[in-house]
Image 1 (spheres, rainbow, N blue to C red):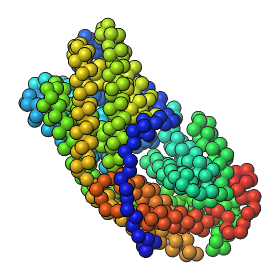
Image 2 (cartoon, rainbow, N blue to C red):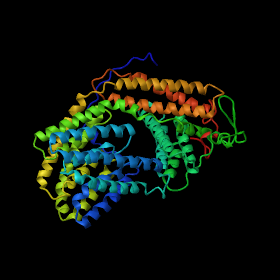
Image 3 (cartoon, rainbow, N blue to C red):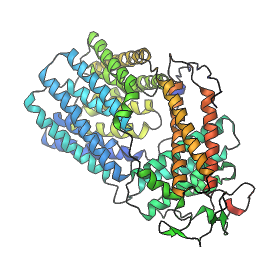
Image 4 (cartoon, rainbow, N blue to C red):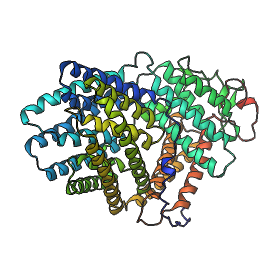
Amino acid sequence: MSSATPTPTRVRRLPVLGALRLGRPSDVWFKPALSVVAAVAPPSLLLVVLGRLDLAAYTMAGSLCALYAHNRPYAARAKVLAWVVLGMLGGLAVALIAASLTRNAVVLVTVGALLAAVQKVMCDATRVGPPAHVILTFVSSAALFVPQTLGQVPGHLALAAAAGAWAWLVGMAPAPLRPHGPERRATAQALDAAAAYAETARGGEEGAGARSAAYAAVHAAWQTLLAAGDRPSTARRALERLVVRAEVALAAAADADPARLRAWARAVRGTGRIPRTGDPRRDDGGPRRTDSGARLDGDGPRQDGGPLGERDELVGVAAERAVAPRPLWSRLGPLAPVAVRSALGCALAGYVSLALGADRPYWALVTAASLYQANITLTWSRAVQRVVGNLVGVLLFAAVTPVAQLGPLALVLCILACNFGAEALIGRNYWLGSVCVTPLALLVTELPGYQPTGELVTDRVVDTLVGALVGFVAAVAVTDRRAGRRVERALTAVDHARERAARLAADPAATPAALEAARRALAAAVVDLRATADAAAGEWWQRALPQERVVLAEQAAHRTLAATVRRQGLLPGPGITSTYTHTEGASP
């Protein structure tokens, strides 16, 4: 593997039409859409009744926290939402204090750019999102240009905190009705991805892409299950076994049954009983043996309080929970180029907007902040999506303005409709969601009082173009020259994980816990390698990437994963073609 020579990496073509292509909506698109409406509506309507709609911008800051953590198990969601609310309040506090201390627009833009960089890096490092840092940056940047006094700051923060607490309750509300909903969805996605790979298992580029997507989905499912907490439950165990079935299907895709995998996925997505798959090593009705010759029937000795094989496939879960999470500081280092891009791009966008005489330079700042993705190619795609979405969005704003200006209640209802539309559509493509986000941002500026529509539309178009252009130029100027090093480190991690898994698979005395932990570590390393290589391939001005080594490392790792699964007794040994994969309840 080390003898493979690096191949030059060409700069990818910058897509335009491809960036606007619509995808399939998210399985749970309605959850953030309904949640944000439920979080925004009560505080806003209460302010309408009180005749203080001018304060709705502060309550909306807290309400928008309801957009986060819908993919997290409820135990983890409670913590993530609390941190999001605290992060929102921290950024808002800095912005309000700065606004009360100075009206110098250059200073305020600088503060906004630094806040945007911090918010971007922290969200990336903690993997908070979607919508990640964009909402936090919008809230803090807008607050910088609202006239304040120091005496008003505590009251405004209290309004945001109260709305944030309500958003937390909205986000946690489904827990009593469907306590394992997020875990079920993640498991279903893993099963569907494994089925898609099984259908393309004959190889080729399509099969390789499906395999990478399947491993990523399985890895995400394990992370979701691990984040659900340490308290065991029957439902959790059943879901873990289904994820194991998805892993087995990846190891022996040619023998997998895609129809069965999809049937399990449909059943898991529903509200009925989770399918019980049993022990895959006993599915053909007879005793099985691992490659080392160990007998694997249900009458063997007990381990972990159950029959042999009942828990062997899950012991790695406890082992992985015992591993300390990676320190936050170690995740911040690789994000230094992104932080510099964000700070520089947002600051320059704001300064150019000010030079053009804009009254709301934070629109250009937020546009620049929204662009920055894992690499320059993706950043370009986001720039195209942002510009197209905003240009269409200002036309929608011009169309709804007559309705919104009928009165405070009409304005709030239009804001709620835009909130719902943005979350319902953004999963199809970012530009489609931006069509609703743009009028939403413009309507929020009218909460203190109505403003000329033509002026708002003109300023928004100019600031969008300035933010997109300046932000992208900053991304090109600030190169990520460490991307190649990260690929090398990811390759080394895969090699080490593969060697350990292969050594344990060949060791007859290896314990089930060690085998499972090694298999899980190797699978995670392969997923990280693919993500790192894809991100690096979209960067410019860097040395050639070892693409051939990446491909060879992935192939070797997948062979080792299959061997490890077979060694665990989850697959039939070579030459065994019994009814193992086709009997009722059998492993796919």
